[in-house]
Image (cartoon, rainbow, N blue to C red; front, side):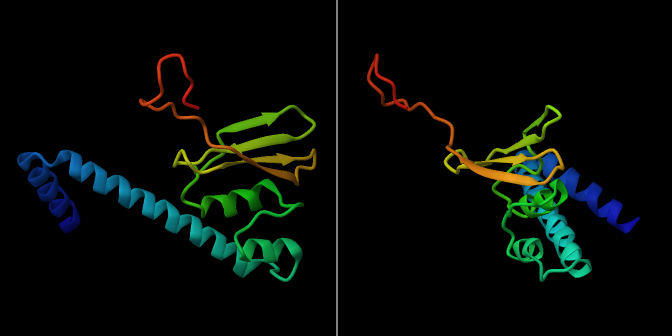
Length: 145
């Protein structure tokens, strides 16, 4: 009950002082940090309950991708990387395998295209170039990208 009262008072203070945007930004940042903490805890749990002396286990401990990982392994590793979206943006499930594309949250970073075979286990990892962002300084008729 005390937490609810405190939340109500803080909300009223933010609204009455015109700081709604600041409060929303702080809430979004806290939510992102909590999601990152949850992902880290999920990976730590996996590391405590699985064999980390194998090739896959060592890769998981080092938070890197390795051939032969399952989609669960990939998700655990990629969720700890806060510069990428929490879930793959694209899933191609044609029956012969699938492809996940992780897009970066910051446009200048490269993304990942992760290809699984039919098992499904990680078969290939490709880095993707950042998308082109047109600039306002390009001359008329010239491409800025």
